[in-house]
Image (tube, rainbow, N blue to C red; front, side):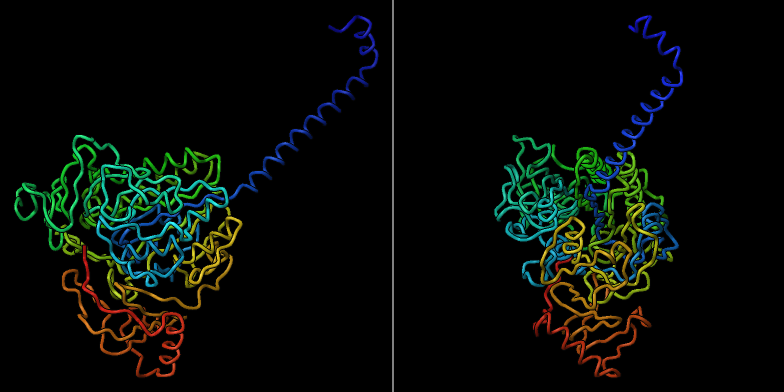
Length: 530
């Protein structure tokens, strides 16, 4: 309480009272602004989050931002329109396991003879002592997670699916993993969270065999009446949810996924990961299954594209990207998150199921004018959509720089405040952020153990004896009896072999290629289209 005497004093000196009040206000305001400034500075110093959207078999021409006219992908287009859209962005390989190996290790897959398309029972391909992208982020204080497709092997062989599964994603750098073991068309058809099968009933153990069926278990060959999806080649073993698979499986009924709910299921896990880790820097490898077979869109998307199930699941993937981006914004981390979007290899239409992908494609060209596709040494096998987005940090642009997923290890290490010395991964952070245009000088390309070479605008494919066409999927493989040399600047479709017309350029390309690859260019092997 103010005494009568003090009150009278301040009544006689109102100007002094006013001065003190104003002084207090100014000090209070200054302190408040200082706290705000400190908070802003701390936010600026917060290491950026990194999210990689990694799709499966998405072609260079499958998105409207890359020229598709028969399908619209507005959410992915937004990333491209507000970020950097690369026209010369590459996976390392024309098949999935090798590319997934390369993006996580920063190492060419042809350096590892086991980096081929793996069965669902394969042991872990990445050794627990190797450098990896998630290990690099962990060393810098990041939380690290993977949600979606794995397909890099699990365990050490002779895996027991009813016990804790190790080594796996967690042992190569991921704090959190919620994955399918291999692909959607392979057994076992279960989710695995941090090494444990989700929802497994111990009284109904899982058994898996890729060589022979279990007695009495129906297959696509013995019980075709059970199928809701027809197989075309290589997918006629166990029937799960009416879909014939690769490999044989028995048990685990309660743990089996529902195919049409897979996109929603993985999205829920990815969104929850952001919510759980938004207070600290995080790295999330979000590996969507679309548009790999079997193409099983949720009923919300079934029939919406007019291009059959393949088009429908591309629409579904676009929606997933949009929903996830909303979560980044709602959780207040969008402006501090670098988003990278790409695909593990090029497109394929008929990859084992009769789902109308060929008949219903209309005028859609998933290759985007490129030659080849999945499994092929021609450019459509490895050149894929490649987009970087960072709200407020990346200015929109289209870049012709040569970039590759193998360079993410060295580039993101710089972003995280460290460096990774690697034989194959090159630091391209400025290029990825749209601040530079000097991409890779050269790149070794790979398809089912065969290799080729890109340098500048030129691509050289060594001679490989073997079939020129994979008749099962109707894709040119890139094999020929002679060297092939193409100038991609004026021959994007690789229609004009200039090997004879440009002997000096061919000689130069071979010499540069062999300096990296050696004289063992790779061999023709029986393609496992599974």
